[in-house]
Amino acid sequence: MFVWVLRFVVFGVLVAFAAQNHAPVTVEWFGRQWQAPLAVVLLVTALVGILLGLSFTLGTLVRQKWTLSRLRRRLETAERTNENPGRTLPTA
Image (tube, rainbow, N blue to C red; front, side):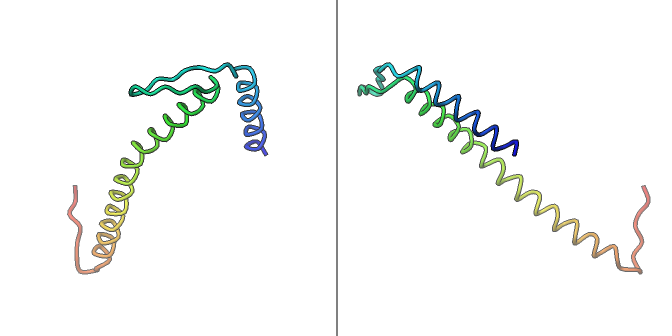
């Protein structure tokens, strides 16, 4: 329920922001010019920033997942090896 209320509030804030910032602005990038409402330009740049952040984070998350699965396999192997009654573990 809390998530739906939060989504509704965020949507309302975005709609109010877009309604109050509809003045056209000129965006120039690599020698090209576009005109769009200020709210659209800001929301698109925010979405691009979010997507870039997620893409940079994705590599780290995949690497951590691989490391975690490798360590789990090593732990399972070590636990199976330690179940051997004839083997003694060294003391610290």
